[in-house]
Structures are given as structure tokens and as C-alpha cells.
Length: 150
Image (cartoon, rainbow, N blue to C red):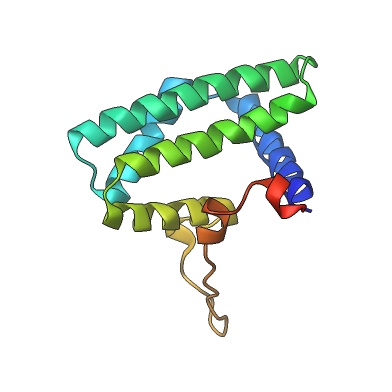
């Protein structure tokens, strides 16, 4: 079930990237800078944190761009999908290690919003609708798949 959900998210992400590329595919530098700017607004990063996070996100964007190009050329493998998400998870973990505890809490909210498709601009709830809060901690600390299947 977990793999099915991940595969679905990957397909949606790839579909979005393909549509975005029809206009113009952002460079890894642009992607990394956008991520750092967004995190800086939300987390109030210091200079060292900005440079380290930029490095992590640049490397992730560069490797994922290569995977996307391979997929578009028709040379992708099933392992590429796993690698794509492993890169995201590793980068997220590395970023959390750079942050102070209070920043980590806000970072978890940022990740949760990204996963649910919410943005700061779209947080207004419509009249009569309840806002449902979910928790990302289960995603960040879930046991490895091997242990779940036992």
C-alpha cells in the first residue's frame, strides 16, 4: 500500500514536471535558491544554514534533473523512481539536522504542506469547512518497509 501511494505521488510529480518543462524547466540553481528563500522566510535561517541547505537542495535538484531527463528519453528504470524519492528523503533528513529544534517543528509543517499540496497562500478555509490537521511525524519516523511487513 505504501509503495502504491509513493508510486502515485511520483507519477503525479513527474506529470507536473513534464507540464512545467513544456514552458521552461528551471535549473538546479533556480530550484535550490527558491527552496532556500522559502525556508528562510519560514524558518529565519542564519547564513551558515542557508549555505548548507543550498548545497543539499542543489545536489538533490541536479540529480533529480538527470533522472527526469533519463525518464523523458525513455531510458528510465524502476530503480530511478526509488532513487528520486530517496534523494528527497535524504535531503529532508540532512536539512533537519542543520536546523535548531524550534526550526525543525516549523520545517515539519513546511514538508506536511508540500506533501498535502497546501501553500501558505491557500490556507484560508471556506465558510463552513473545518480545517483538519494531520501529523507528519509518522512519515518522518516510520520504520523501514522490511520491519513493517513482518
